[in-house]
Image (cartoon, rainbow, N blue to C red; front, side):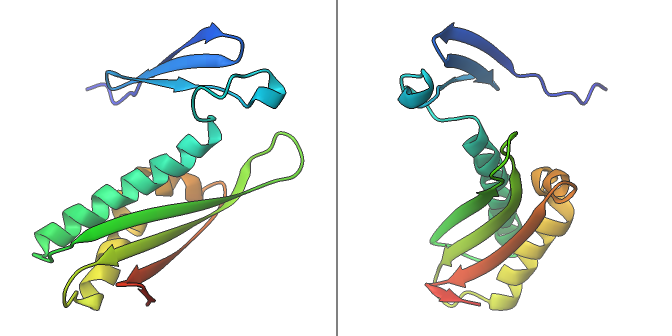
Length: 143
């Protein structure tokens, strides 16, 4: 079995590209100050989105298996960039904002831990090249 992901990205014009991921087309562009038209997001923030989506899907899936009812989950990922070129992320911080009635904190912590340590392939890869940290906020309180 071939375990390969393939993404096609083609140049449209100026600094604009269209990438196709799992049959979904996404426009990527640059800021106007570097020749783009700001018609789509920049490439690096997709790295943050990939981490947020990967770990968020894990956490929701794990909590459902634990029969924990969640009203809302927001995963914020902050990335710190180097000043020198090539500008790259050297640190990412994940903030899990979870809401629900009578959420069992031990299960929430366990779900986040399982995602970060065992299931999320994006965080596993990123840990090899940068510092990853996280925090959990339950019903607006940091735990």
